Image (cartoon, rainbow, N blue to C red):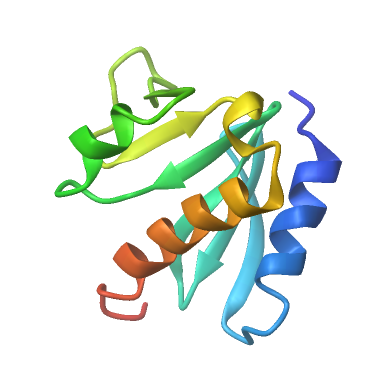
Length: 109
């Protein structure tokens, strides 16, 4: 599956100041890892956002967000955000910062 390279580049620009970010190909797309923990990524044209279990229900109430059901079973703590929900740089950065906040609360791997 191909992923939106333009969205991937936008993520790279958001993370350009961090030295602990690496990219990995996963889920048929691209994932940004922070200190060894999965943070967010691109699957098709969607943002894959790791918001954590405490923010999961709140995240699902946001426009264009839906359950991440990559295997047919929703992965709690992860959501997909449709392209319409991340068209503006502010919207994308807001989602990325939400993911970053959760992932930075985890121990580094």
